[in-house]
Image 1 (cartoon, rainbow, N blue to C red):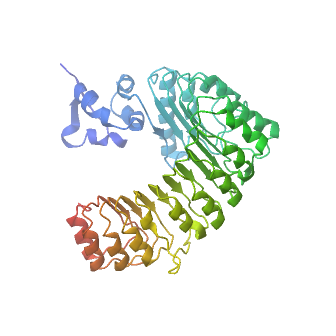
Image 2 (cartoon, rainbow, N blue to C red):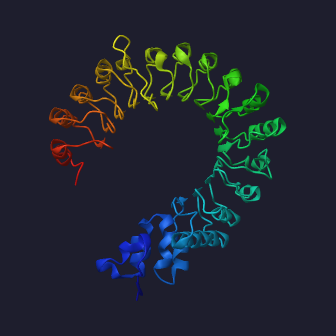
Image 3 (cartoon, one colour):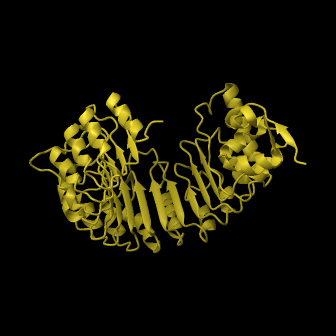
Length: 457
């Protein structure tokens, strides 16, 4: 006969003791309830159930786990801090005892006094994905990582390895690793260390996805001799670099024919660099956010023959019309800006209607004109549209309502309130499934519309 347990109050497990759930059998708890709880809540709150939690957590933790202690009180004292410390120590202890051996996915962010990283000392032999993005803290010990022989995806962005500054320990993972994210965190590192780092990374011949950034360094420079090592990664499909001065080395990057995705955020790219990028005919995805490429740079990039995804945010939009004219295979376009960019020029509008295959457009905070809304309304395949921080009157909403395939619309933070005519136009979008109205004043007509279309309960 199955035993029953009386649940004590506390945390995310509260639902189990409310009302009729005062007492439940083992079978119901183990097979019908706990499998539907997030793993982090099992770790955090299972101890509040009964004394058998040791066996239960071992049984119920799923094959993958995202453990992300984002509690704002993590670094504070008091009851919350003590409770979190106990939670973390319990998790680490279970890893060390081998109870988490079957984990395939582990994510550690905003760590609590560095305790969580000690879980890597345990048996995690089946782990395939590890994300340890730590800012301003020392990284996990290299010996913890080198024993993860099945690791395919490793993200150690922002981590500093004082015992292995050149990332030599990664060579122990070269037979399994296919995706790597790492950072240059010390602007005073000597050239030899940086060159050895890139040499070691270039030996990870199975890596298809590589991401490197300069962490909190204002701008990090890599010369041609150093970046040339990456050419050895002949299977590399995606390369992402951020806050690394790359303009003088793009001639080398442009020879990497295997690349289909390139991201160069805040890398001081100029029109000359764009000229080299334009030679990469295999590119399908390009991100050049936070670079002042100018009109000539846009002209160069407009010749990329196979580009389907373009992100060009917080940039000089003077040459955007050239990109729209030339890149008519685009399916994804993001041109959002941190501040109003002033695209609104009635004599020089952007003809978005030429992007017949576009399914996603983010034009947040770009100051689109009325004519540009008319061009957008002709995009028959557009499914997702972000117009947050835009000036939207009933006229612009009328144009939006003509989109035949629109399923998601964001008009948060727009300057004008929506009148009854605007709500009527929105009601005509029969395909709409998601509507975002953050910081938006909604009148009674709006409430009626939202209730009518089940956006409100």
